Image (cartoon, rainbow, N blue to C red; front, side, top):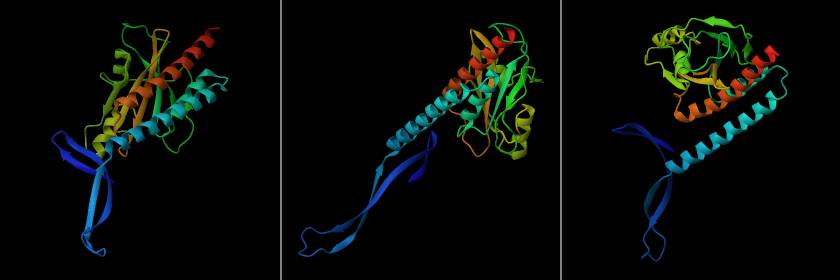
Length: 238
């Protein structure tokens, strides 16, 4: 069973394996029960290792399945959406792909304009919606996580600090994300030394915040999406 313990570093969960042992005296001629002993064993590390291994196997399997499905797509843009759909399972509630307007961006260039090209449905579950290379221009404000991701050429995590539901909803809408978004993870799309855009994964209040291991998985997905988008751009020029 999992038990929450309060420590100076915050609340930590521990997993305890317990069992009952009957107490009896070895000196008695006949077994005489004296009581019951309740024994506990801390198996937290073993359980965490088991869960982490299972999660890694699932994510590796999703990457493998996505690669096989994307290989059957005639359009590289559709392949990028396939990678996004497979990554979403068990990982996030929403996902968005924003591309750099006008093509890739070399490091050190000036301000960037992003356009929305792929997005998961906001309502019922279903395949990602592809808006095309032109996309919908996004007027992200200064300090937006997606713009930070482009500037740093690295992953950026963000969380709604407000505990109030309405304030958290305003936080998401101000960033042009689905209103139930509370946790965000942006991973940069890089190919051939250029930044092509950003993929953003979003979680609602019912999920935990993104951790470093989540960022590493998102970066693996971003590499595959970026390769597909770069191929689409090259195909359009040929």
